[in-house]
Length: 265
Length: 251
Image: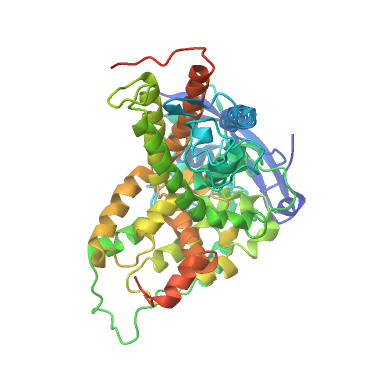
């Protein structure tokens, strides 16, 4: 069992050699986090590079939306600023935004610092590293750019909401139809909005930076609502992660013909 | 309902020590501090323990119980199984004086590094006027009883003694946040928080929040908002530019 770092043992502290005296299953939560996040990374990497089965009129996978290269499947896009020179999967263009948003997210930082970097693995369980500088220097000081990924993420949410709205069409493009795919894309967009709006940077931008709430009653109201959402940010972080994977999986199954997109009307 | 509990208590000083086993009577409704007092009264008259109010308000009886930083007076014995060994050790981030008593003067040194409340020049005490919504955020942080469990648990100093010089710890960064959010405080404390008090060492793993006996949301309501405020002035060129174009100090 690892012991406390030398410096900590020689500072007049109580001589306790065990890494922790906790008797509960403190290792369980980091383990679950590793399993879930690694599973998601494997799935999303495979799907992002597969460059297939991401569109079936009117459904588009959130991994490939907006599709910005001319190599995108016909009908999946009208806007191709990346033109024909982009020869890799078009998912790689857009996934940088949610990847950056989640990597710099205050909740995910806690999750992966604890589970992957073990810094610390759990409270009052000593970490294995000899040195610790936290987010004081590169590259982790770049976590401070979280707000920019938040703003870009909002743009992406608008696109994914648009995708959910146009899913109220049938395969022939006629409006006022609804399918399981519509529900899936709507749920995905809703969860992403909840995740974004409950973000700590959102809370700060809307009112957190104010010193005088009383001088800004509207922003104070927004801040109050977002603060309430913010307490559930971890839940929305996980639900939206599952949501986006499930939405992609559903579109993939429909696009490759494994299942049919069942229409309610 | 009375039973005999197995307790292990760290006994020693800065020269060394060990966990010592005791069998102690436990009665219904008792907390860990009661058991420590019974130990003192019946078996270990020289056992050193710091305590005061026995009501979770003075922050004196901080210790680690089965490895978790907690107040002994708020930890009920019925949260453990009757056949479970309950281990009590002193706070591990601070130098031990004797048995369960540690030297927490690090915290008072850090407290002195935070400039005190600075009202506008010319504003006399008694003339302070502000609305409740302007101070409600700060009031949460005023619940702090300075038990220093958060300071003890924060791995940035618990596991890295060498960081004590650079890092003030969650309790005092929360104090900075409290003052920076105060409507009548005139000092800009963001640079201080980042450059002098080591806010960057915080990697928001929330152990300070987990152990706070006052249930203050230290990370979500103090440290992360403070990090965002620092980002406003140090890591956000667009916001910086905006502040130069539109002078809006003291929003």
